Amino acid sequence: DAGVIQSPRHEVTEMGQEVTLRCKPISGHDYLFWYRQTMMRGLELLIYFNNNVPIDDSGMPEDRFSAKMPNASFSTLKIQPSEPRDSAVYFCASRREENQPQHFGDGTRLSIL
Amino acid sequence: AQSVTQPDIHITVSEGASLELRCNYSYGATPYLFWYVQSPGQGLQLLLKYFSGDTLVQGIKGFEAEFKRSQSSFNLRKPSVHWSDAAEYFCAVGAGENYGQNFVFGPGTRLSVLP
Image (cartoon, rainbow over all chains, first blue to last red; front, side):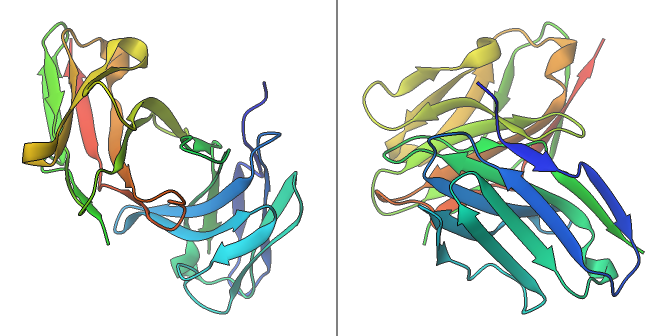
């Protein structure tokens, strides 16, 4: 089975630009999570969805960040406008219901210049 | 809310030596416990999980972990380390039936393996 697929793997852009990160969860998984990983703060949960509905976005750092899940097989995390402090690795993860672990994608390494 | 500590930021062992990575959690009830491994430039891969039952759980790549309620610990062990085990290891805790927002990662332990 295909795992969680994220794109792009790497993104380098200038500050002020809009950045869109994409995620395709594992088929049949009802939960989708977005994480950010930095050296200083480790892994932080940004937002998660259940059945395409955002359940908890309290980890989203500020209004510049937004996430959508228009259907069960696709989610986006958007940063507009981007800032250098947004540079990090962003992971998407998915899981089934009921006591199943999360499965992670390979991440998107984002660099904002 | 639950929390996770991994007291060792960095551990170095020789290839063939035994390994134990420590994980302590804070939570009022029995949590769901996980160990993940992250190789450089890669995502997190699940090594093993504990939900209930036998407190000694076996995982992939020869790893095992033991849940000790009295010590609030879930330490990861491997009897003989291979050079390919060099990576970052994360302990994680999930709480409650819907542990989406209650899924917390520890800060990680970086493992280096000497030839």
